[in-house]
Length: 177
Image 1 (cartoon, rainbow, N blue to C red):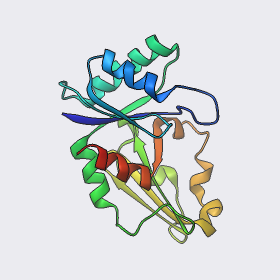
Image 2: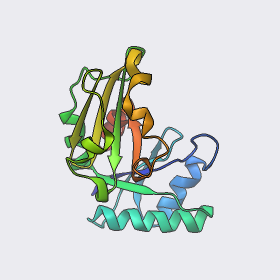
Image 3: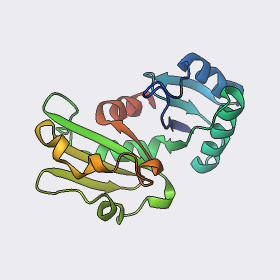
Image 4: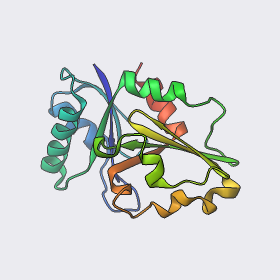
């Protein structure tokens, strides 16, 4: 079955540096096949025989700790789940000079409709939608800094998600084919 692993915080802000070619080899040595990395921020598309994403995520987390010397929070999303998320997002929601659209992939513990209340977004300036496994945030660039979402960064809640922009998510979905 095809999956994408989203490793939180890889090569962001110069803190946890990992070469994508070494990360791909790590996945291969763990028994995963058809391994492809996408951009330099911890996105890995692969095939696994295991069918439980949570077990795969734990296995990847242990392997990365062994191979690189540090733990990296990891979410694994099945091809079907990622494609459902992408399909639910309006095609005109983009990440460009005018708009910002992010997909916040959620750890199980916070993955329910109540996450929208915890994020306390402002519907006057932004749209936030919960989908199984994720929250999609859409805001104009003009209102981005007015958003309440920027206050989430650095909180405990923020540590229970990993964020990718919509362009990356759509590309990962295409790579799963």
